[in-house]
Length: 105
Image (cartoon, rainbow, N blue to C red; front, side, top):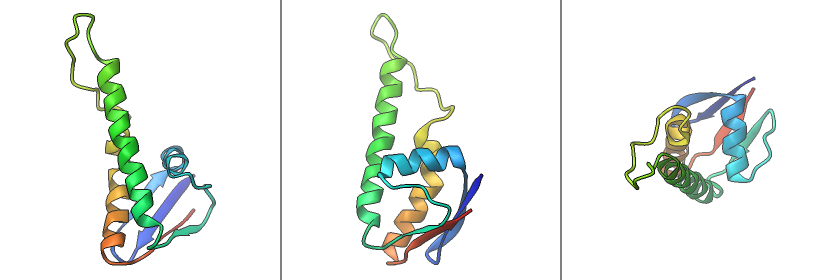
């Protein structure tokens, strides 16, 4: 399933169900076929997603540490920050212009 997010504040964002479900779990919101994120909700949702992205990077860094204590660069595949970036930017643009973010399937 594909979710289509839109706001008057920025370009549309299209995400597959697996990423959308992961993000909505982070945001603590139920994922419905259609919905809206209001201007009032956006600051807390943005903070929650940014915190989850930072935690994901930290976990990946710890997972990639060598036995000698040296660390490698975290692998980019399936990195939350990379995959969630367009949606996070849409929420930030919507917050800046006091616009809601709406979605549908």
